[in-house]
Length: 200
Image (cartoon, rainbow, N blue to C red; front, side, top):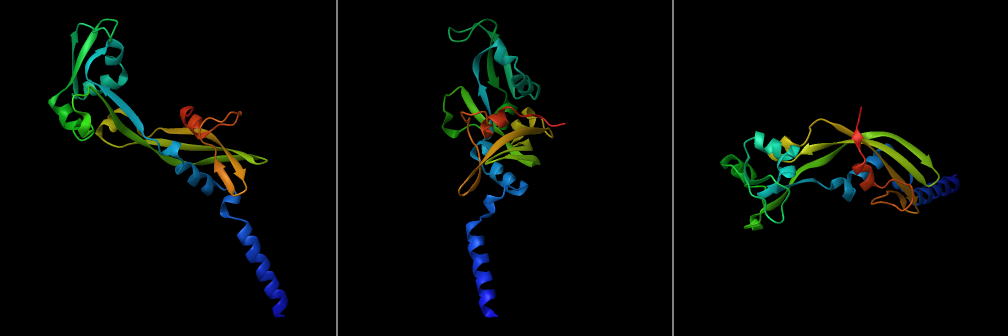
């Protein structure tokens, strides 16, 4: 009686070792792999340029929001050789802007007139569907931007969910999310995030 039970237990152990949880593309696994991918963890950045800027830059939606918040001010100036066509603006931080941006601007910025500020991070919302064909799968998912600071809260549309589709590929050690821009027609995570549309 002990012999058959021992054989069955041994077979179950061997099968369990051969199949890892990554061999089955579940919604939970797909969500975890997307969330921990480098492309998904990349933060949204805003580039703030002080000093002489073009009219196009100064009238961009981001600069208009900063001006409405009272964080920057601009006065018309003569365009420099590097910045054209006229009109041009001399952009400076207001005292409120200095207080707001003080902790966001790198301490080694010195006399630099251009600063890159992290404004938001992606937050995974959920998997909406998985379609498998052989060793490939298209995974539909939703996500949203979450502001990291006061500037992000002003520049990022909060509460908007985005939908994306990314390709997964099954390897000998389990499923992996395709990152970057693959040469084939499959959609990598970088492209999926860039092509995201607001979810209904």
